[in-house]
Every structure is written in C-alpha cells, then in structure tokens.
Amino acid sequence: QVQLVESGGGLVQPGGSLRLSCVASGSIFSIHTMGWFRQAPGKQRELVATIPSGGSTTYADSVKGRFTISRDNAENTVYLEMNSLKPGDTAVYYCSAFLRTSTGWNNYWGQGTQVTVSS
Image 1 (cartoon, rainbow, N blue to C red):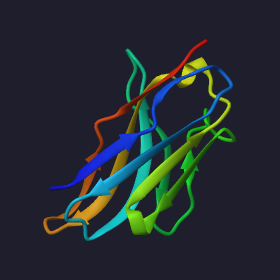
Image 2: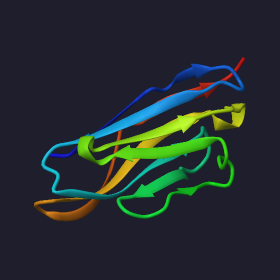
Image 3: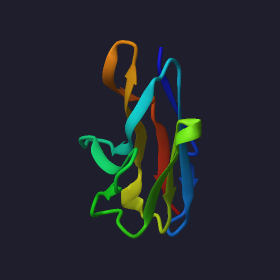
C-alpha cells in the first residue's frame, strides 16, 4: 500500500509565501517523477511543477519565477516553495508520484491540501 500525504497548505495574504510538503510511504521500490498539480473550483486539475529523479524540473508558465519544486530522494519527499502568491493561486494542491512497487510502475496521488490566497 502506497500513501502520499501532503502538508503545509493554509490561508495566506497576497504576496505571501507557503511551503508544501509531500511524503510518499509504503512498499516503494523507486520513484521516477514527483510533481504538484492543483485544481481550483470549477476548473480542471492542472500541472504546477514536476521533478524527475535525474532530470530537469518543469513549471507551468503561470508559476515560473515564483514557485520552486525540490525533492529529497532519501526521504521520498517532494516540496513546493511558493512565493509572491496571488489570489489566482487559490486551489487544492495535489502531490503526484510515478513510482515502482512489486506490481510495477503506477502513478499515485495524495489527498490534496487547500491553499487560499486572500486578504
């Protein structure tokens, strides 16, 4: 059984910062790509940022220069540092991991953490 658990969401004023964390646990053989997605009310889930195990990061244009994704492979953890937050960043943020277990490679999701940017 694999679990992804996010933390760090909350309410922040425009221009503020938050740091999200996501820990993957369970019978994991290896993790290839980890990432963050978000879904605002009435909108589809969209990619925020991804970080593969050995390659370069990717970001949505809307967050470039403001958000930074990083990971700690030893701890199976991915982070999202969010700066200069805007009301448009308000959404539920989901962690994703493409990883290998005894049954092969599959993509897993966390339960989501709410980020609200408002004055």
